[in-house]
Image (cartoon, rainbow, N blue to C red; front, top):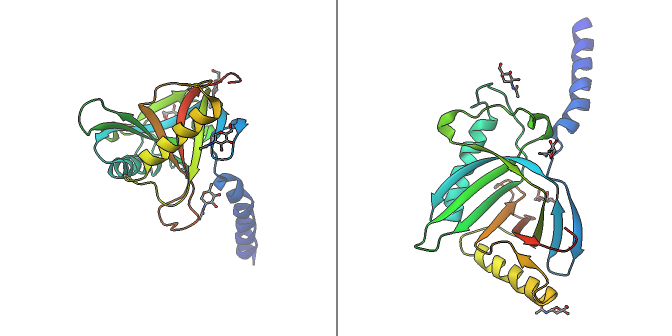
Length: 205
Ligand SMILES: *[C@@H]1O[C@H](CO)[C@@H](O)[C@H](O)[C@H]1NC(C)=O
Ligand SMILES: *[C@@H]1O[C@H](CO)[C@@H](O)[C@H](O)[C@H]1NC(C)=O
Ligand SMILES: *[C@@H]1O[C@H](CO)[C@@H](O)[C@H](O)[C@H]1NC(C)=O
Ligand SMILES: *[C@@H]1O[C@H](CO)[C@@H](O)[C@H](O)[C@H]1NC(C)=O
């Protein structure tokens, strides 16, 4: 009887703890401009854990980077801490001027409680703590899976919208650097949300 009541107390306790623990944290932003096919967001500074990679395929690099980050969150860190992975994965892409190789930087947003002193990743994972300053980002949403054969088209569409809408008022930071944000785990086959991000300079940012 006593055992059952303490089990019941424990499960009630878990029920109240899990929802807030599981709540997905994502980086904070305000919307500076909302147009029909894109928006401009001002992100606050944020802290990420990132896997740098070189490769020719966005999909392959994101998968590899995610695998390294996943091991880190499952305890491959010097504290053996488990970390709830936020479902937002951002792959920053630097286009190379020569050849098909690009640099990829696969990142996940660190939950607030790990920000001050996050557990050190095991060195063989080659992960980097990545502190991003507050920044202005132009965003275009797209559905389905983010793939090698659609991300560049989404970027072009974003750049076209920006150019049209603002007739040169917006300064692109560096058009060879952009990022793809993926919000859903890969087992979600429909209702997926992705975004292409481009850092920009914008008057109210
Ligand atoms: C943003 O910067 C402030 C001041 O430098 C710092 O205290 C805070 O932890 C930073 N926030 C994130 C999410 O890194
Ligand atoms: C990781 O372990 C070190 C040494 O035991 C400790 O000082 C630090 O606070 C721990 N960090 C976290 C995030 O648990
Ligand atoms: C260009 O921007 C104007 C508003 O400034 C909008 O009405 C028009 O639909 C846009 N054209 C394209 C092709 O996006
Ligand atoms: C995908 O993620 C977005 C943003 O978090 C969410 O609104 C949507 O419901 C998710 N889709 C699925 C199928 O879970």
